[in-house]
Image (tube, rainbow, N blue to C red; front, side, top):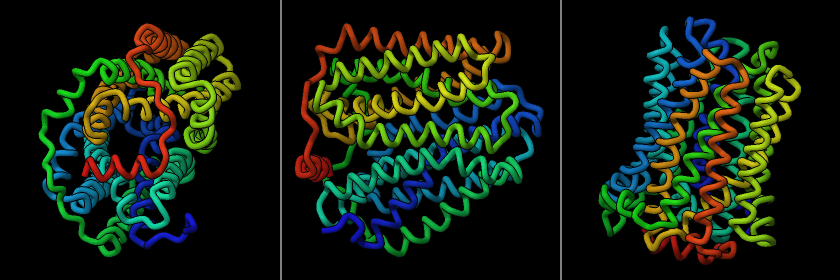
Amino acid sequence: MSLLKQPRAVWAVAFACVIAFMGIGLVDPILKSIAAKLGASPSQVSLLFTSYMAVMGVAMLITGWVSSRIGPKKTLLIGLLLIIISAALAGSSSTVGAVIGFRAGWGLGNALFIATALATIVAASSGGVGNAIILFEAALGLGIASGPLVGGLLGQQSWRAPFFGVSVLMAIALVATFFLLPATPAPARRTSLSEPLKALRHPGLALLAVVAVFYNLGFFTLLAAGPFALPTYGVMQIGWTFFGWGLLLAVASVWVAPALQRRFGTVPVLMAALGLFALDLLIMAIGADNETTVTAGIVVAGAFLGVTNTLVTEAVMHAAPVERPVASAAYSFVRFSGGAAGPYIAGKLLQHDGVNAPFYFGAIAVALGTVALAFGGGLLKQTPVETGEQLLEDVLVAD
């Protein structure tokens, strides 16, 4: 069947996925505006990323426990409701501390929603699981790419507008999901809270979690420090810069990473992507006083991050003899919780040591992740790209 011939329920969840993934880069164009309007320092506004990622990481430990007890649809709706409330309250706040706190609530809602969105699309879609996976990846890419652009467009009116905009869009997604998605019963087997932590005992999964911490330190250092390294750029210029970053990330995730993996294998390509990302950050550190260098570095980084995200996620699925949702929760917990430190450290370095210091920090962190992968790569299973039928089997077993 055609990829576009899907039930309305699938389109409702896919639309919500786009808005949910917007949250990653939405605040980038307005970081400087928030700092100016609320009298905040770079390290304070960097906590908009830290609180969001830290809470989302910890919440990944409970998403399986919640979903296996109340069912995917209720989990999706609770996640959407939390995002709606948190985004609206953040836009209504008058202190940077309040915005940071409500951004944490947004992270909790995002964790509940994203953890169950893929399985929901697979279950409701027509035309095979392959089409469902493509739709999810397309929604992810569109959300990451459009987040900075939407943030820039709305941020021209006020720094509050992007938060209210997300709240309104998520409210539409909530209504559509409630009415269009059929009721989904809870799975027969209930997931325990300890399963993701126990999964980290497996060496391959633990290695990938460590690598992910290091590259996420670089990832979110780029997001937090990038806008402040572009002092003459307005909200819209920063939005277009990070739109280019997100667009390359999406293209590399969906098309480039699978092609390179089939040709060269997971570990060699992953090491090359991490090494090039570290080099990119180093070039940005050296040329941090040149806005053209920083702009080009931000955009090009999207390609390296897209390849890295896809290949690490693929490797996680084979790294331990546990169900996929459990492995994903374990990896995401370490990845997001550890990576949450990156924006705060970057903000402090930016504030006290100059504009180039955060990029040096990011380059060193990613380089350490590359070294860890070089020494531990033998722990990872070398597996081919999976077919839609194999993915369907895994989803059914997990549920």
